[in-house]
Length: 248
Ligand SMILES: NC(=O)c1ccc[n+]([C@@H]2O[C@H](COP(=O)([O-])OP(=O)(O)OC[C@H]3O[C@@H](n4cnc5c(N)ncnc54)[C@H](OP(=O)(O)O)[C@@H]3O)[C@@H](O)[C@H]2O)c1
Image 1 (cartoon, rainbow, N blue to C red):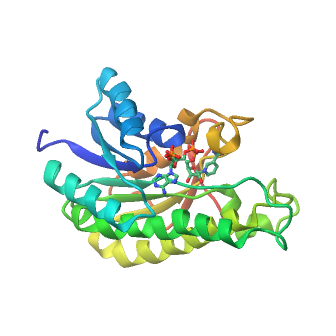
Image 2: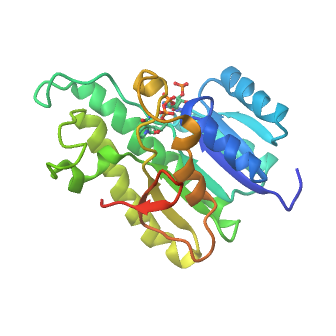
């Protein structure tokens, strides 16, 4: 691997928005590491990217498993040496619960374990390699459903949406984004959350929504943002592809 390459790790990159993020970062010249809990599916995804001329590598990474995360960190340190961008894309959502009152606590806990603690487990493990970059970027895959402002706004599309445990897990992730961004600002590391918009993937039953390539755009923009780019924000993309700052 060339020492001038920029290097990115994308979690949950074997399919959906994560694979599209890896493809777009690869097309911009990044060496991409695809963190995937099933290494076979990760290797298959990396192979499709390599056939498109992208320097892609799969690494086994289950964000809920400390041993798996430590193993992935050791592999990336040994093979790559440092990281310029970490995209915490892996996420979990269950079918809509009947109501908040009846939502399964076990399912809520699993979503927090993946969407909140998993993200922090990965971020803490890879931070030493991000610090070696000099201009590292961390992107948290949040959701439009994370916004407390929109949840309280009757005019918002998210007003009638349920999924309380999922939404709350992404709201918690937003706060950790802000705390981490403030802590790392003096080191030049930018930390932002993104809303991909409703995207047709396995998570949404491949129903209505734009393509994973479109859903990937805000994450790619923040993962590659320049020295004067933003930090501590929640961003989506407009239809024309411009970044749009959203309310928390
Ligand atoms: N689709 C939307 O409309 C939408 C909207 C807002 C936010 N998001 C967020 O966007 C992100 C990507 O979602 P998607 O729509 O692309 O869904 P997806 O196609 O279902 O992909 C989810 C990815 O996360 C991985 N993952 C789940 N649990 C994991 C774990 N414990 N360790 C490692 N990887 C794990 C999955 O791996 P496996 O293949 O092994 O299951 C898969 O690669 C998620 O964070 C989601 O919350 C999506």
